Length: 383
Image (cartoon, rainbow, N blue to C red):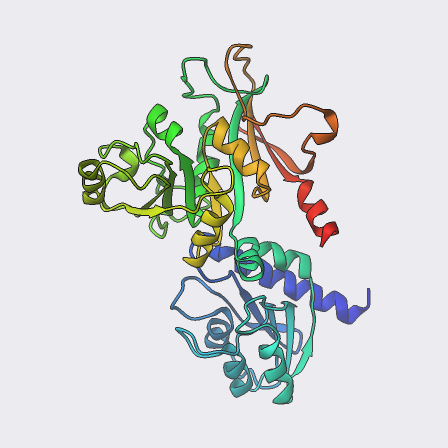
């Protein structure tokens, strides 16, 4: 690596770290960081915190300790070129006299998609990139997938015992994992735009599916946490109106498929404020999960966390919807009569779903393992 590229990598790495400060707050916008360098000194830096507020480039320009004329801006994502809730960042960089823009990755948003870079070059700004493209890509897995495929990035979270069980035969499941793992799940919820669960889990556990972060948490600012959309997959709309997940004050959406629902029950549910959508139905007569997730993407949902039981978890995996499988493993044995991790009928070894291990680490007394399903690679090869 040349000295110049080494320098670009170091400054872009700092911009990536800045972007991560928006991990829990930027929905539905991407997480972006920006560093401004002049004479090998950082003179300004910024990141995007919330939709409707200043973008990373604008915040970095505003923080500059001296004139930025002739300086280099390192931005994790191509500067925008269109007028949204805020003016185009490409224009702001040009007006400020920035001489060089080093970008991490091109913006997948069709409204930008290279136009920001073209505008900079047309104005005489030197453009260099991509730099640390993989790292910048991982900042916005959900935003990128929504822009490219019209679907959110979906994480399936599950907790199991060492023998692969999620609950006792009776349904009792609290608590399989320890407090550290449960806190980690709260952080997963906090960075998600929506949490999806099934009616079986609602009936069995009556969960709230809210984000609960202590005020002294070192990673997440409890004051800035936004509650994700709570999505219930309930084919027959059988959920009780008094279910905790429907409590007022938190946005909820229900997908169902039966239109001949008892009007009195339907009205009672509507009084809770829940939004009820009749989901598309697949050829098998079941709810079309792919279409449902597409509808969420249409609402600006970037990242979905699926927390549900064995049946719906298996359905998401069978449909090829799971981008990331997060499994917490507790050092417990629940026995052969306890409930399995997921309902996934497979008859022969060649049909087994292979997983690629992304990471494994201890969380308290439990293990957290993150996997990528291999079918994603197969889909890419077919294309």
